[in-house]
View 1 (cartoon, rainbow, N blue to C red):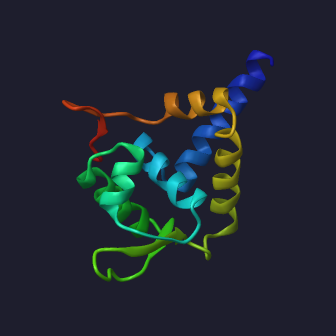
View 2: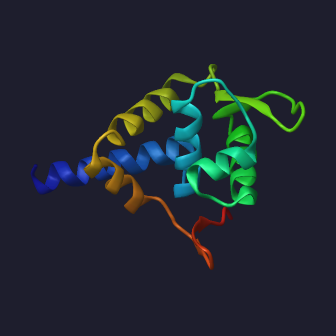
Length: 131
């Protein structure tokens, strides 16, 4: 890959991240969890245990993803909700999301995404704080 095509790819990735509205690694991880699991009946605490983030971080990110109209969730019932990717996402945003998902299927793509996304480490190591 030439330097120009690498820069073009980096710009495309950044444009897609901006277009989708993802700026934190925790947002990407949680969005991909919801995407990969389809419509899931679960809780923020359960998602946190499965992917290694603090429950508060997962809850905050789920709220943000819902406000940004990336996911939808049902009203809570006995502490759980249905979570899924919003079906009515506009075509440009959907294209960007699919491009990023495709990129994340390779190790080098995941590394590129991780480099582009902001990571704010907490004292406990792996967990991130959504700010």
